[in-house]
Length: 141
Picture 1 (cartoon, rainbow, N blue to C red):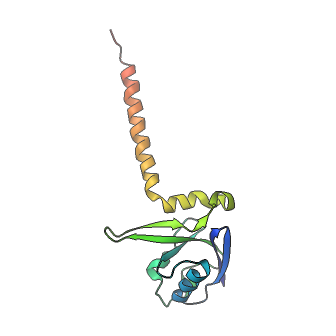
Picture 2 (cartoon, rainbow, N blue to C red):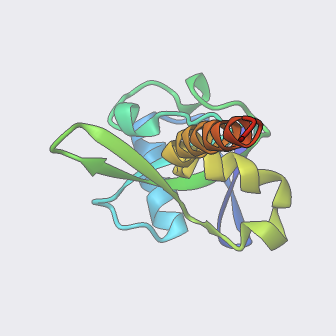
Picture 3 (cartoon, rainbow, N blue to C red):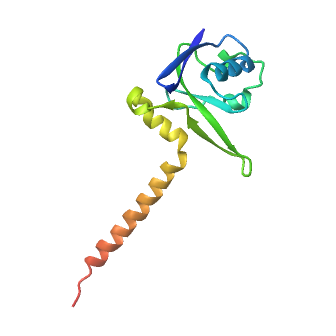
């Protein structure tokens, strides 16, 4: 049972998931060159984050969380301890060239607020345009 992890400059490594999560995460950090103090996670090809960070000290098997023969993107987890939020940073570089199919998924995972901001800005812009056009339609003497 294995998975493939994408990271760095179009690098990929295969990992055995028939082991305890604590060992899997330690091996993942070591082989991908991530500092042992940093928190990491994986995103699957559907854009779902696996939440390894919450279970990284578990003695459950990695196969209970990860699907065999799948590709995952390595993410770094950055926590804001003031408000409890977390942000993800992709550790896969040059996504546009190496894996263009993952570009949009990574953007949504790593910048979730931008999607909301675009929607809000779009509504505000549409309202402003609507009010301008309605004021232009008013007959003037």
